[in-house]
Length: 105
Image (cartoon, rainbow, N blue to C red):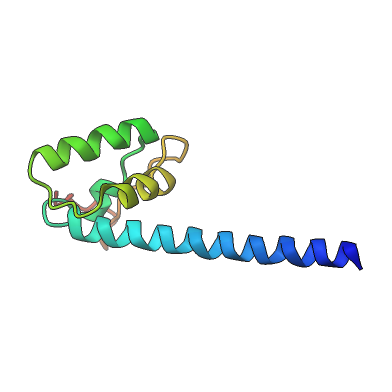
């Protein structure tokens, strides 16, 4: 019975952590939409491959240049997870004739 309680407690904790993580990522995505796309395409932002420290510097640089960041922390949680330096660079999107599309940044 004690083992069952421990398993149930672990499952409830895991569920809470997953839900919190999902909410954190959603807030980061919303902040990215608000803060970044006014000047850049999402493809440009999401094709970057930066460490957390480099993302922090990039966010601060963009704020200094006038990016309308409402809340820096969700971006700092989101961008390194979505576009970390450990992920491969995405391939360019191709036109119908197989030619890479030009970036709109």
